[in-house]
Length: 470
Image 1 (cartoon, rainbow, N blue to C red):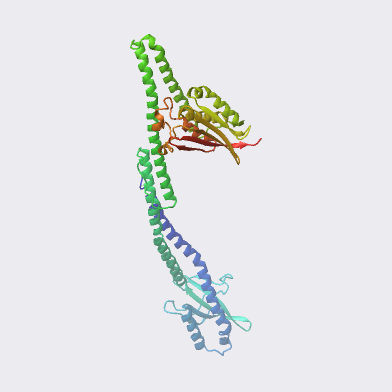
Image 2 (cartoon, rainbow, N blue to C red):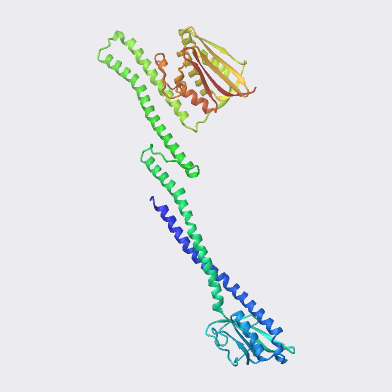
């Protein structure tokens, strides 16, 4: 598995090399064959026409002797590296010049036909079987007295043209080999920049799948691979945190359930076996009822948090008067406040102030914050609820003169089941989930909640909601 991708890439690289060489060789041969033949034929025909029209006609008016003609043809043979024949109109050889590579010229060309090339500039073949291999033949008429009295023929081996073609093809193949070798750098780059990081990422995925979330991928680059590695490291860190949170959550829930259940079980058993006499039943039944209410509150808070854990939670938003809600929530604590001699002061920004939010959840936010303020306030103290308008927001503040929150605990109060050391003695019935629910509810609305607290002085919670005009 871990070497499959690398092996595939090497195989593809090798196949690419063979196909490239084959393609270059084939294309070079096919693309140069016809142009080289035409270029050579054009060059030969130009030379033949030049001599046939400007020099050889003088032979027929006897101003040019045969030796001079032979000398001229020899010069052409050396220059063109070809066999040069001068024949009369019937095919009888007048003069010829050829190198040792060409066979000697015949005295007569049997069945000579100047038009046998079929209107083409040149013809190929062994030319009446005078040559052992294919030659390119061009023919130019020697006109004297307005009629062709003779013809100049130039024969050049096709193999000479093939030699030039082979030189070009070899140059192309060598160039392709050099490019292929240089492209090996691409394979090295793939190995170092893609394959090796990918192996580390694959190994990390295997480790995570087996449950080893401590495995960390080294991040050495800032490219896509580095970003992917960093993302996987972040994912594993988040999963570790989630795993720790899950263990902590289960431990906290178990502890908070076990304590009241142990009390209930102990008192019921004591009542059942007669340890607790009937005249004390009323006292211990009230304790059992108190512990039962703790379980009910904890269960309800867990159900509420479960709603917020669902990221697709739907808020039932509506427009309502936040001042009316504050008054009703404050009134619901009248009995508790009277018992603890605590007064609630409400300072409202206007007679009516409308907001757009989920009414039930905001009511729970106000209830939890006010309940906390009452729990941690001293007797004969004042709790202030105040609203202010700033821009398109409504800010609600709940301030108490209670025990305050230690600086070290300010960032932890939003954690589930968290209780500071100062609160444990006062909050007998609390579940440690109230402020978590408050923050989740406010954040679900896309708003913020802040806390300002000084130990021994008091605490103030401030949250925002979108204001609605009218």
